[in-house]
Image (cartoon, rainbow, N blue to C red; front, side, top):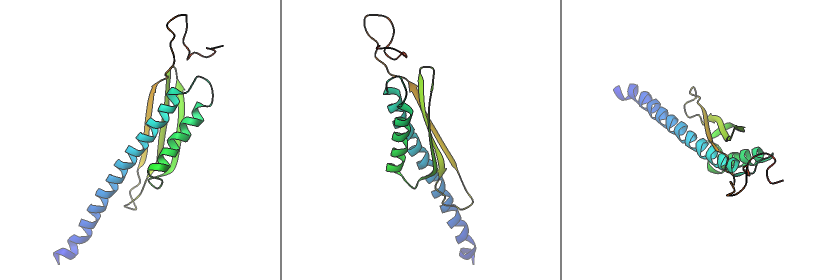
Length: 130
Protein backbone atom coordinates (compact mmCIF):
# COMPACT_ATOMS: atom_id res chain seq x y z
CA UNK A 1 0.00 0.00 0.00
CA UNK A 2 2.85 2.39 0.81
CA UNK A 3 4.44 1.77 -2.59
CA UNK A 4 1.19 2.60 -4.36
CA UNK A 5 1.12 5.98 -2.62
CA UNK A 6 4.83 6.69 -2.81
CA UNK A 7 5.50 5.73 -6.45
CA UNK A 8 3.76 8.77 -8.07
CA UNK A 9 5.61 11.12 -5.74
CA UNK A 10 8.96 9.52 -6.58
CA UNK A 11 8.23 9.66 -10.32
CA UNK A 12 7.29 13.33 -10.06
CA UNK A 13 10.47 14.04 -8.09
CA UNK A 14 12.60 12.34 -10.75
CA UNK A 15 10.86 14.31 -13.52
CA UNK A 16 11.49 17.58 -11.67
CA UNK A 17 15.18 16.71 -11.38
CA UNK A 18 15.30 15.97 -15.12
CA UNK A 19 13.45 19.24 -15.83
CA UNK A 20 15.98 21.33 -13.92
CA UNK A 21 18.81 19.44 -15.60
CA UNK A 22 17.38 20.31 -19.01
CA UNK A 23 17.05 23.99 -18.00
CA UNK A 24 20.66 24.02 -16.80
CA UNK A 25 21.80 22.42 -20.07
CA UNK A 26 19.73 24.88 -22.14
CA UNK A 27 21.38 27.78 -20.30
CA UNK A 28 24.82 26.41 -21.14
CA UNK A 29 23.91 25.94 -24.80
CA UNK A 30 22.49 29.49 -24.98
CA UNK A 31 25.64 30.89 -23.34
CA UNK A 32 27.95 28.98 -25.69
CA UNK A 33 25.97 30.23 -28.70
CA UNK A 34 25.99 33.82 -27.39
CA UNK A 35 29.75 33.67 -26.83
CA UNK A 36 30.27 32.30 -30.34
CA UNK A 37 28.13 35.05 -31.86
CA UNK A 38 29.85 37.71 -29.75
CA UNK A 39 33.24 36.47 -30.96
CA UNK A 40 32.09 37.08 -34.55
CA UNK A 41 30.64 40.48 -33.61
CA UNK A 42 33.74 41.67 -31.77
CA UNK A 43 36.16 40.76 -34.57
CA UNK A 44 34.04 42.11 -37.44
CA UNK A 45 35.19 45.39 -38.98
CA UNK A 46 33.42 48.65 -38.22
CA UNK A 47 30.37 49.20 -40.36
CA UNK A 48 27.15 47.38 -41.09
CA UNK A 49 26.57 43.70 -41.64
CA UNK A 50 28.17 42.34 -38.50
CA UNK A 51 24.80 41.92 -36.72
CA UNK A 52 23.53 39.49 -39.35
CA UNK A 53 26.74 37.45 -39.24
CA UNK A 54 26.74 37.34 -35.42
CA UNK A 55 23.08 36.36 -35.07
CA UNK A 56 23.42 33.73 -37.82
CA UNK A 57 26.44 32.21 -36.05
CA UNK A 58 24.65 32.11 -32.67
CA UNK A 59 21.43 30.66 -34.12
CA UNK A 60 23.43 28.12 -36.12
CA UNK A 61 25.27 26.98 -33.00
CA UNK A 62 22.01 26.44 -31.12
CA UNK A 63 20.62 24.43 -34.05
CA UNK A 64 23.85 22.42 -34.24
CA UNK A 65 24.18 21.65 -30.53
CA UNK A 66 20.55 21.14 -29.51
CA UNK A 67 17.91 21.92 -32.11
CA UNK A 68 15.03 20.77 -29.87
CA UNK A 69 16.48 22.20 -26.67
CA UNK A 70 15.30 25.81 -27.06
CA UNK A 71 11.92 26.61 -28.59
CA UNK A 72 11.00 30.10 -29.70
CA UNK A 73 14.66 30.92 -30.27
CA UNK A 74 15.46 34.63 -30.35
CA UNK A 75 18.91 36.00 -31.12
CA UNK A 76 19.67 39.71 -30.85
CA UNK A 77 22.90 41.64 -31.38
CA UNK A 78 23.80 45.20 -30.52
CA UNK A 79 26.50 47.73 -29.92
CA UNK A 80 26.97 50.28 -27.17
CA UNK A 81 30.05 52.47 -27.19
CA UNK A 82 33.05 50.25 -27.85
CA UNK A 83 31.20 47.09 -26.77
CA UNK A 84 29.29 44.59 -28.90
CA UNK A 85 26.92 42.00 -27.50
CA UNK A 86 24.83 39.01 -28.55
CA UNK A 87 21.83 37.71 -26.57
CA UNK A 88 20.27 34.26 -27.07
CA UNK A 89 16.91 33.47 -25.48
CA UNK A 90 14.11 30.94 -25.72
CA UNK A 91 12.00 28.47 -23.78
CA UNK A 92 13.74 25.39 -22.36
CA UNK A 93 12.35 22.00 -23.28
CA UNK A 94 9.43 20.96 -21.05
CA UNK A 95 9.58 17.64 -19.19
CA UNK A 96 7.00 18.38 -16.49
CA UNK A 97 3.93 19.83 -18.29
CA UNK A 98 3.15 22.65 -15.87
CA UNK A 99 6.75 23.90 -15.59
CA UNK A 100 7.98 26.38 -18.23
CA UNK A 101 11.32 28.16 -18.03
CA UNK A 102 12.60 31.09 -20.07
CA UNK A 103 16.34 30.96 -20.75
CA UNK A 104 18.33 34.04 -21.71
CA UNK A 105 22.09 34.42 -21.92
CA UNK A 106 24.17 37.39 -23.09
CA UNK A 107 27.81 37.72 -24.02
CA UNK A 108 29.51 41.09 -24.41
CA UNK A 109 32.99 42.38 -25.03
CA UNK A 110 35.08 45.18 -26.50
CA UNK A 111 35.40 45.60 -30.25
CA UNK A 112 38.76 44.32 -31.39
CA UNK A 113 40.56 46.67 -33.73
CA UNK A 114 44.01 47.39 -35.10
CA UNK A 115 45.90 50.15 -33.33
CA UNK A 116 48.82 51.38 -35.46
CA UNK A 117 52.20 52.16 -33.88
CA UNK A 118 52.50 55.46 -35.69
CA UNK A 119 49.93 58.09 -36.52
CA UNK A 120 46.75 59.17 -34.87
CA UNK A 121 43.48 57.37 -34.44
CA UNK A 122 42.32 53.80 -34.46
CA UNK A 123 41.44 51.50 -37.31
CA UNK A 124 38.17 50.71 -35.56
CA UNK A 125 36.85 54.28 -35.68
CA UNK A 126 34.16 55.01 -38.29
CA UNK A 127 35.78 56.40 -41.41
CA UNK A 128 39.21 54.92 -40.62
CA UNK A 129 41.22 53.56 -43.48
CA UNK A 130 39.88 56.07 -46.01
